[in-house]
Length: 337
Image 1 (tube, rainbow, N blue to C red):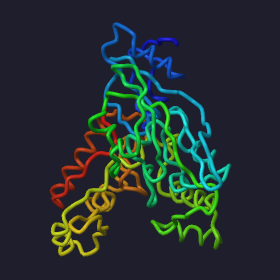
Image 2 (cartoon, one colour; image 1 turned 45 degrees about the horizontal axis):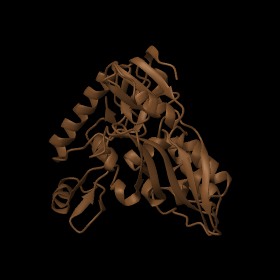
Image 3 (cartoon, helix red, strand yellow; image 1 turned 45 degrees about the vertical axis):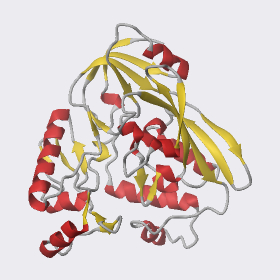
Image 4 (cartoon, rainbow, N blue to C red; image 1 turned 180 degrees about the vertical axis):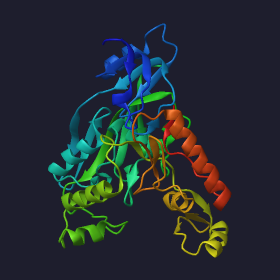
């Protein structure tokens, strides 16, 4: 385990923001994580994963522990399902591809989501009608205070839309080290009705899709709508889709007949934040070397050497404008550091 000084974090965040860590350690095992958390003279510790869901607005005057614990293993299996455990430092999409190569079903709709496995439960990542919680069994996390591993079941995690216990009462208290998933081995249940998956499969001339076909369709859709972080700095969807009261939605429908909405309960409706942002005039708008992506209004982008504060100021302007126009508060999905 080596402590490095004044390390650039630009390669480690998908926004491509230049910021420096005063102290930095690449963590490659649970024992190294325990050792690093036990170091004296480092009162401030920041845990870094895949860097795909954060916006750096300043240098890190702290000890940054970059979780790079690798490894995938099969815990148990029977004729119909398999329990697969992936360590926190595994790239999420590469893990999905590993499962698809073995014909393990359940993760195909979550293809090409940026980030690492360890960050996935924090956000309860989701796409195209599926969420992590649909295949989640448990995760092990190291308690930062006691240096002991604790197992969190699905019930323990309190999963909600882009939310979990790790963003609430466990925030800053523990570090996810591995995640266990239950995946299907045969008779896979396909989920193709959400969004444009079915349409994409038709364009691919596929009438009897496999889980691999669904994954390819999702990848093509995402690539057509979302910029590649390796080419244009971004963190995917910057904002959550807001959930509002049905009465509020009905009033909005009077002034904006075309507003889309999706009922989530008898009293609430989810409204696409991307539609609100586009209607507010921000889609494709560029402010020097940063702005809003031309294909997807939910995505804020760094075209060059933008500062994190610039992008944060833009996010606040979008929030303020949407609030004024629709009386809807949209929350950032991205962690602001």
